[in-house]
Image 1 (tube, rainbow, N blue to C red):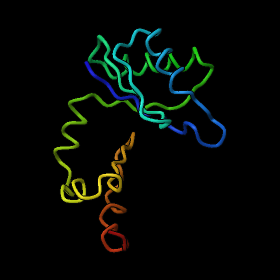
Image 2: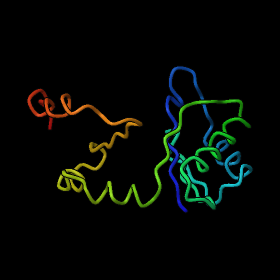
Image 3: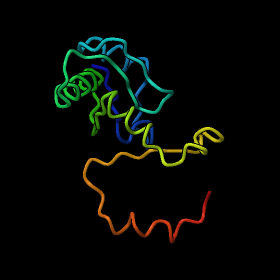
Image 4: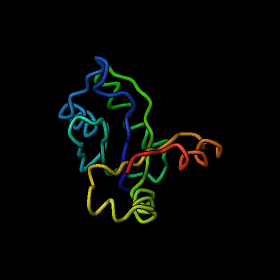
Length: 124
């Protein structure tokens, strides 16, 4: 299965992870077709598991080899494809892709702040 590991607080505040080293450590931990995005701390890889916990364990093992630890959120390729398909702003994605962001939360977000957002957001 194809996975994306989203590492929290990487390459900010002195918490430096070299992406080439992360790719090598991921491969050593058992991941295949490992890629990273710039210095974002996002790592995409294949693993012989459909278990989020087992995929996260591969990332944790790789980080451990590097002497680094951080929270990791896992998303599989199917979940990411559904997220892209559900984009409520396809025109923005086409016109200004660098200005469209997706934020994933580990826990459900309370409805109150989400419902209040349209009334307080003043940007495009």
